[in-house]
Image (cartoon, rainbow, N blue to C red; front, top):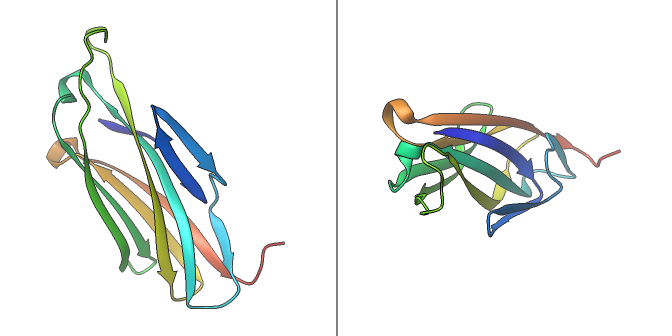
Length: 137
């Protein structure tokens, strides 16, 4: 199992095996005042190996501040089947999108942490981002 890709976006939606993303790949956003209501999306794809199909894999998405304080926690599961037309040994990509409202207390650094799987098979991707005071440009 591996996290094939992960992006912070303005909006994301996974539909029929495709990821639809608006405003994707940013690492700095602005807030005119604090506390600020920030809406961000997390788009990611988990690649499952042949032997990892037909098993539930837990998924955890967290938004944390610089001090490691959890601001948002989303837990779920992914389960990828094995279609009869899939060539033996093939991997499969499962995609997820989460649109997340976050209350930001102050300007500074934050992290979106994505975990998939458990134990020795657990994989993680960390996406740092910043919230700055003011307006862009």
